[in-house]
Length: 192
Figure 1 (cartoon, rainbow, N blue to C red):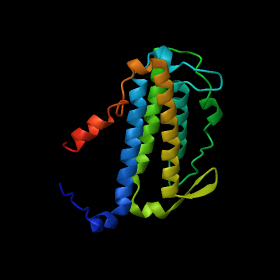
Figure 2 (cartoon, one colour):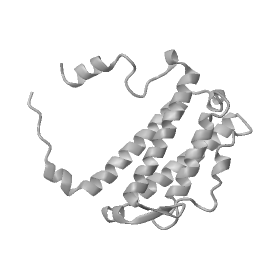
Figure 3 (tube, rainbow, N blue to C red):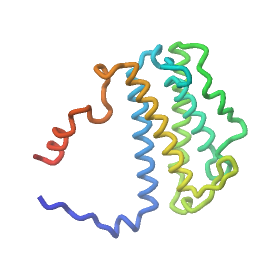
């Protein structure tokens, strides 16, 4: 079967707006990937620390929320490290390991993501060439966004590794293809 060539002119003429849409899709997928892991955890597992020096899913979620609230509030006009942020306390394990504490963390998680999406949705193609600061270090907007996507992807990966360790591979519900499923998936996808 002959594949249709992409229309290069349409891709290059809308690249900045396409870039914004792509970033949003990647970020939405990362959020969904994290929540897929959270949804497989009991409250006890959500707060479990696997080994000294590691973080629980609760701590990682709290840190991500704090980062998002700091970086994306007034994204274009204020430094990304807000004076009211206390990053170090984001890594303190919660004193209570209850459903109510988990709900508070998840409420903060949602607020962080909605702040991020609100800022991304307001960006225009012209904004991509502007400069923002993070800890007074200048970043072009496009570089600051990619920096955050990289940071969030790293922590979402951590969440999934911790969660899978706690749930166990046999009980794990895969967000992506389960091991051993690639050939069948590719055959189906390619109509073979």
